[in-house]
Image 1 (cartoon, rainbow, N blue to C red):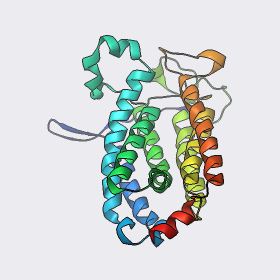
Image 2 (cartoon, rainbow, N blue to C red):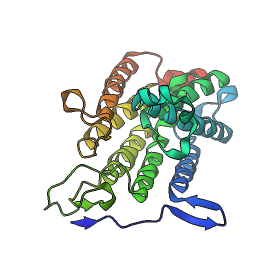
Image 3 (cartoon, helix red, strand yellow):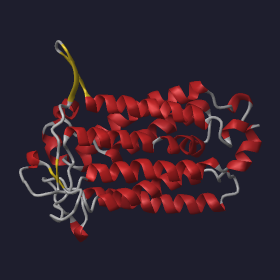
Image 4 (spheres, rainbow, N blue to C red):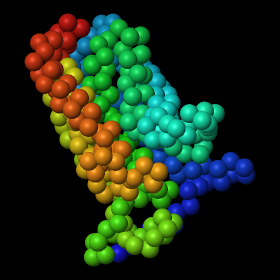
Length: 279
């Protein structure tokens, strides 16, 4: 049995300016996206697209900028709507109090989808082509976020068996019983494992939409599994069918991922056809 080590959430204090570890993990996530996006430019079909539709480093920078806005705005609004709609309906100004915490991945995902739609429209590119480009670059950012969760000692897991070797006591949770370090589980599954599988899958040319579909399905499945070990939000608890809010939000992701993958597989306007039309 392990004990959660107290980690100062402030990485660096310079006078009144406090730099938090959580903020640094966000910077790491954005930096990793940029590096992987530049690498992705060398993968097919993007490396073969020439002319006005050619992908460049500037595209990666613009997607990152729009994606950051989508993550922050969508993540905050998603938390307010999915988890505490009644509270924020009566306290609307607190929606803007982001320093109080409260972000939801599924809301951030919707925000990123809107950002990609905007980017695709402005560059006159198929939206699914943009989604296929972005998807493999996302999991490392999710992994960085889980590191931030662990440093903050938040989003701890459910109670674990006392003989679980890696069971961890989070004293600030109000209990001295060991818990699952669910932040680590999510780091490994939604972050590293999903990245490896998706990056390898995307290295080969796929039909347009199948890489994005694989991300939706993969994240949905891994998050659904992790939720069995993560402590549900105290103000929500376990919902119908014994599932948490996080699991219910993963269901449409899993179903949508399967549907999109099957549709893309039957659609003749696949990635290969798209490459030929843009070259």
